[in-house]
Image (cartoon, helix red, strand yellow):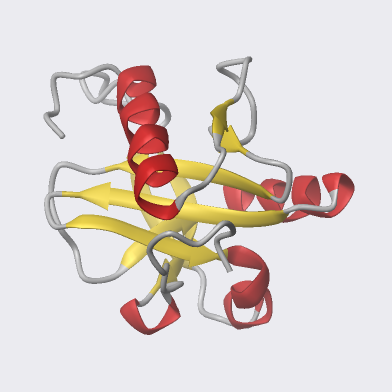
Length: 145
């Protein structure tokens, strides 16, 4: 997936990929400011697109907590999916809830928003997602689990 695509186009391509490969019925959320990007009757998914591969992935703590709370409210399973140059990496946040809440908080000074041209940096707080925490998806399944 090339970096010159809009975020919305990347989400739509990812939804098509997962619907076709795993026989899902994901749809894009209607509002661009939703907490998550895609959903079906059982799951909510937040996508994160990176241009470079890193073995360990990161999720902002506030994003993690909002996804967990929304999933509880709507009785759905929350997933975080990172797409980079090596592929898709899926994490079931409900399964990782205790591990993440008990893990070390990583602080990084980064741009407030994705506009990297601005020099103002703030502290953001992250949990680290390791390869062993990934959710394995089976092809042609009708659910993610």
